Length: 445
Image (cartoon, rainbow, N blue to C red; front, side, top):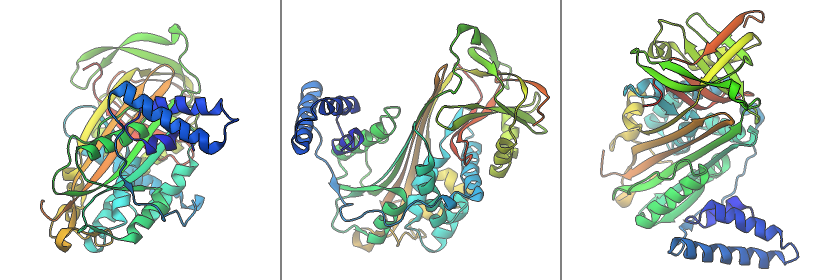
């Protein structure tokens, strides 16, 4: 049993305690395995009571007993069109954010949570969700299954389904099986009370490496199901900014002309790309992923360029990256965003999923008194920190279901300094699928 599995079993216990218990267990390899595991669990529980002053939460009922994946990952499912569709979804979400603030989304996290939900959609609801996701649910599910298994260290993804303990809530076994097959999703039944809020928040904290510690403040009385994806990313640069001569004070200028003092990290160009209105580069991580930065040309606003960008165009830019002489500059920055995506997804073309009368999730199940299930909220929280050694980023996406009671030129000399608004993504270099995408409009506010 790994430390991660122990963390899943005891939701309220700090992951560091689990890690410490795992190390202690390794030092006692002469013990019988069963005795060692039992002792470790007892020690962890006791430490939790001593350090937190409360007993560990009662674990929600695990509904996945008897459900195991009946399919294996298929590398041929990693197609360019689904990769571009995931990128397009991320761009649409960034374009829909009209707050004027910095933007940060995880296309993979949103696609995973909506993809799990779409496995239970039927009729017009299924058609609309497929159009917004850019792929049929099964094709997306196969892609994400293979994608998760293709990633190297430093990336962790988890999925879960939480159900209200209500004898009148009927969930289709085929829906749980599909999410086991493609999303490795755990399913839990609980009272949907304060303890459930704590359990879901602890699950979120565990699977985002502590970067996002709260998803829910409360559970509405009408909510009967949550489909949740959590994602964490932590990787060092292949070539870190180790010396002070690579980090200097600089000025970041917003589109409005405001000037901010920043710490700029300089290095040689690794991979360079450009088009008629922008240029950019890839800065590689040790785990096979890369930070992709796109800087619109002077006189081109970041929002105008973002409006012209598509998933296919972004993929083409990244594919064209190649060697060039020159230097790049990335400002140290940290972003945290919190979105409610219902209105955005409705505007993108899936209104029936949020309509009490029109939603068709009969492949998922039925609610009290055989009532219709529909989506009431889609919550999305993100975090990123970019610094000298590398990048840390986390995301969580939750779909709340409600029970029918609510509505290159290789010789070119270049320099690309991100000293004005820019677009960025974290992509794996094999498929170019964006784990995270963002827009930096301002720094230091």
